[in-house]
Length: 634
Image 1 (cartoon, rainbow, N blue to C red):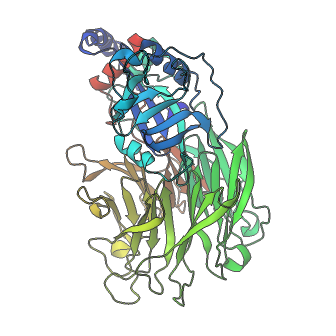
Image 2: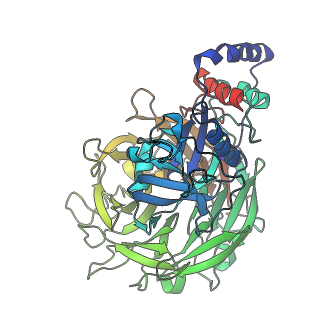
Image 3: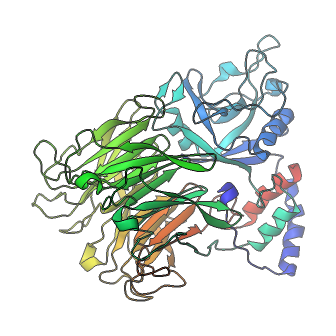
């Protein structure tokens, strides 16, 4: 999570730490001289191995930009088929050029390394020695970019992607205009860091080793950090809706100021989440319920106001510039109507936003529902214009399509709690639909149903997608115990999605409403059960799941979460979210700290400790080897 990482340290004792220190030097001969850098993006984390010995000048130059945080906030601004590359490091999301901070470097393309799929090379102008900050990743072989002779110098390869080429392929197939990725882009580099730099000082040294030793074999769990509104009041319902992304969190309070509503932005700094802004609608009125749904992505946030204008509904886009959040657009549906509840559900990813209107009527079908996708710069610079309206291919009345929505890159999932896959009407068994942008348009890719779906399950009550997995909650399964289901693309035909597993709580009980809220990301799933009574009547709980090490199609419960100050009626777990970088947030709108149902939220880092450098959620010798390599080189 880069600068937003929260560390939980445990003591291993000086004797064991000393043993580790000796082992550190014993492993050195077993590993080659290669640096490991991680690029944290809104499409996932890209891990790059650098070829220090083959391209020392180029690698040192790249690492100087990494250490200075130069790449943080920049994008992959160029995608081409010939050559087949994605290029980044030169522009921000508004296509403002980043001014290089280092001088141009000599061209080392004579090093014998080839521009093969997955390799990383320096971009340059016509002058062979003009490379500075921009780099590219080959998503197919481009050997014609290699060194030939002094008259055909080529482009210098200095690294290769070791995880995850699936992300590179997703980026490579984004739609473009003048080679610039359009929505569902941009692809934002939130953070670039040397793996092993655990204290964020842009170097790997003994201090990082000390942190590593203290996290040795740690499970990685973090304490819940509680946040409340600075102006909290009785009945605000702060925590009714939540979202988190990298260093920002947004929390909705739809009953603030006589149901006018508000949303609060929190920012992570030095181990604490502090309130940065309170957002309200420029035309807010009583009963708008602004903050009834929220989502955040980089420097943009979307807030739903389903009660706006007699429940026609609306959603608002806010943008952050230099720490100031300002309203950028008010979104309404092109075919809005009374009691559509447009804005009941919202989600945003990069320059793309989706808004659900679950009671919309289409072609005479009462309450079949709809979802609307908006693009930034659609119809003008910084204009958020409606790009498409989504409906289910098999839509029928009372489907309530759009009750839940989630977007991640080129994927969208939409819940339809009233759908009746078995044919009876109406039965509220429910379903969910996955749409994918194919480079030209959004098309329905799959319809998801539960393998054991039953009447009144309301499958689709909650839904979340990260491009590799989708999770769908039911809320009402088996007397309100609830359930959640994880789906993944079929390995043979990725246009089909298969149910991988069904999740239930280890302490399931009637009316827990496990699955009322769900989130997926960072190789974890988070499921809320606001009705859980273990810590008091309706005190609530949330559960973390992760893939089984031996069988990744099975997901195991990793932890049950509850607030240290749990009380009756807190409804902890009513809302949950996972963000880029591994932060998670849980809402408890019924918390009474600042008056009855004033509300609160809890933020944590998911179960992987900072010293987990190879992504297996534990701290072992493999991670120490990575730390050693980067320590000795830097």
